[in-house]
Length: 342
Image 1 (spheres, rainbow, N blue to C red):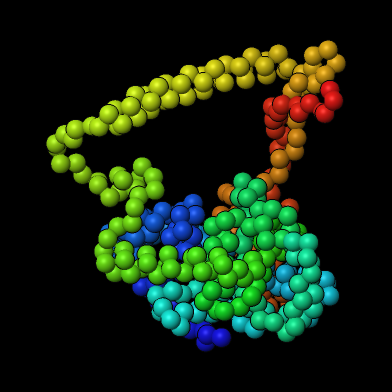
Image 2: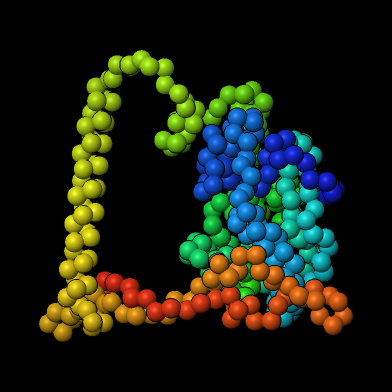
């Protein structure tokens, strides 16, 4: 097992867990071209604004809270749990430019069901990652106690398993202030065998060689060629055909968006103030009011999530969900799926 490193190096000198997803083309935050620009200093990572920095700091402060919640939950499930360390960084023994930071590490003894099969831990050292999952991001997570995590996080966790040499990464997802959900990423040597050469190639053939990777999207092309040279390039017939097709598609999209808006307005006006639209006794659409409870970001911005108890220890504030959440009634227009046989 690799020994942890205490100091955190400059991120431009290594590929970390979140970088792994970008190299594989799986990251929603950066493409391989954007990552290459960051690592080579062409596009230094922007300093977060005050609001983003507060969110980051708040998430960092929540990590011990999430970790303690998941330890208690594992113990309730009958496992013996020992906290080994937190926020340790590891370096790959073969390629020192591959590195990872593990939020927390546990020693587990006992058995659990993961994705419908029993997994036995016999004093096993596992990686742990704490995530605060809010808003629309919740929809990207699957069933608890499975490996159904967002693909960009799966790449990050597999990167950590590759470097630490361990079998399992426990993912503690705080989806509300009431409870924490447990997900897993189990080591897959075939996946690691596919990831590893791509990570090595990205660093050696692109970062060190100072050669950009192939663009994946239009913004990549704009980033690689921010200025034009003032000249024209002759189009092939294939490109001419693609220009014509793009012109048609853009016109079709605009027309369809306008039709969609008009149809939605007409249908909603017909239904209002009722909750359902029916034809010959069969529901076609619903437009029902429902409670929508969300964390009020303005209230949460800059708020303290911990307070001192009588002993002087920091503990989570009482009932943060009630303090920072707000509920309002919203109406959502939905189609009714016909039942089979109807």
